[in-house]
Image (cartoon, rainbow, N blue to C red; front, side, top):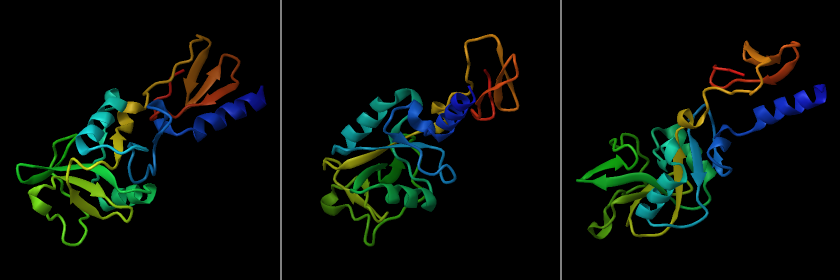
Length: 190
């Protein structure tokens, strides 16, 4: 029984919290961002990439990634191997994030960017070095989706036997043997 409990504890703590969305969703660095990320293996236009992100996890508010600071930008750049769409796009002459509609306040433009080449570059891609470039939205490239970990993390965990109870982030049975360590956003419930 003790070996089973230890294995259960290890499995629960070793799992990526983003697995609740799907197996390809990853949390990169919880100190930098508590979001979950999906890195596409296929190329799509900006609009199709955004639609795919929204379809992948609609109940988790997923969209093309919104990069809010240098730490997140560096983290994303370190995780990609191909130039990819991010969620910034040009709307009425201003850059905003496609998922939230919020103005882009942080950016990491490559030198001489954005340049709106041929008046036809209204979407943003990130290079593997972390610099950004405005690009034609019709170009097909890889893309990065982001979902809110707050929305994807269950606030409670229930074991369907009435003989279990929670105490100090741990789950015990009525014989007081440890069943599992629960740290679901500081709200453990058996």
